[in-house]
Image 1: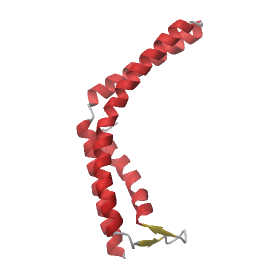
Image 2: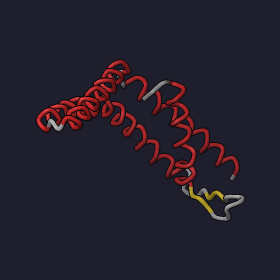
Image 3: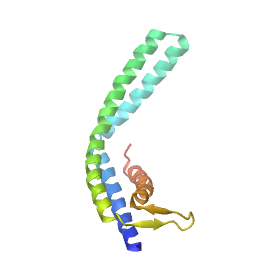
Image 4: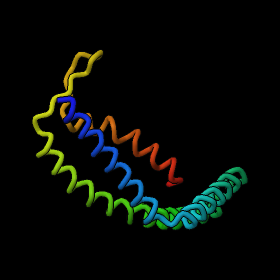
Length: 136
């Protein structure tokens, strides 16, 4: 039982690291930084136009923000599809390998299956790996 938990922990951390590496490799960091600056610029322009009561200017800057947002979406889709492919393959393997695993929570008094244990581990691990790699 404990060995199964440790194996799942190791595999989960490895998968989180792989997903973070995919995001690091497939995301253009300079482009994302540029997009973020453009979004900030257009947001300020929308706020200025709003204060002046310039509806046409507000609409124009909002349209510009939407164009920049579209570029941002395209940048994030590449690593998302790659990591989704890896995730689906590994998730199926986890399901067969750890199907009978039940994890008892010592203080909460309830049981978790492998999937909940995976979720509890992967979210903070992925956040930490992305922070360490400087992935947005």
